[in-house]
Amino acid sequence: MKIASYNIMSGGFNDYNFNSLKPQRLDLLKKAIKEIDADFIGLIDTFKWKDIFRQQDLKKLFNYKKVFHINMDDVRVDKKIGLTVLTNFLNVKFKKVSLITRNCIQAELKFPHNKTLDIFTIYLDDLSEDARLEQIQTLFNKINPNPTIIMGDFNAINPKDIKQSKDNFKRFLKINPDFKKRKDFNSYFKPSFSNMLRVDVIPLILAKGLLDARGENLKDRQPTVFTPLSDLGENGLILTVDHIFCTSEIKTKKFKNYKKNLFKKASDHYPISVEITL
Image 1 (cartoon, rainbow, N blue to C red):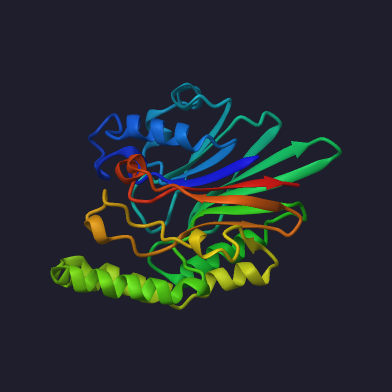
Image 2: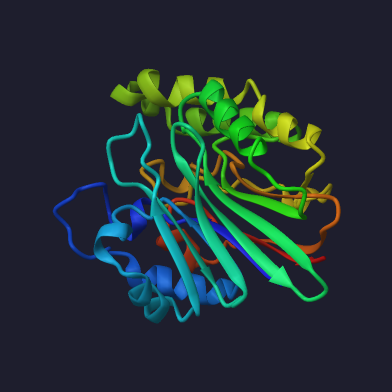
């Protein structure tokens, strides 16, 4: 069974403008999601989808049998960011789960011989490691003793990726010295990056016994943001913030980063996937 996580950047819209009725990158996203060909995919940042798409619309658009989508109802971010799950697995129950300051999706998949798999699709706060810690701690208080997968955009880095992240950011600033002159460099980018470098969230997840689906293979530890579509341009590939974590009962193989030209145009994040067995 292949599962995937993909931050699709403002729901396929070119920005977070409420005037647009149809996502400008929808056709690209349809091609990208078809290329990934996952049995279960969590889509992150599905801005406005709850307003403009019914579940049956999304089933038809992406050719999936089951769909569940929510607004995240974030207390800080005043825009309709959302989460969407697409799957061809029929025996599944979905639930919106509150993480105090925003919501996530729980999917409970039922297998033969009374096996149950819980998959949580999450999108953690983009500014504060403290907020991310609160959100992930709240999630752990709600997890059942089933085999569990937590995946999505964590806006957090693994301790193994600290050096790579620092080196990438330093290289980016050297190539793009004017980036420091942006109004949001000191107000957003610099404090956000500094908060990530605290590296508190991922160690907490690992301490709970979950395993990073990337494993130890260095080729799998590639940054997932930013693609050339972002305003950081061609040299913006800096951070690994999209993750898939699994409890130890779950066997994983064939972790994959998607870097084809299609994915450079479809979102500012690259998608990831892994094959699992119970």
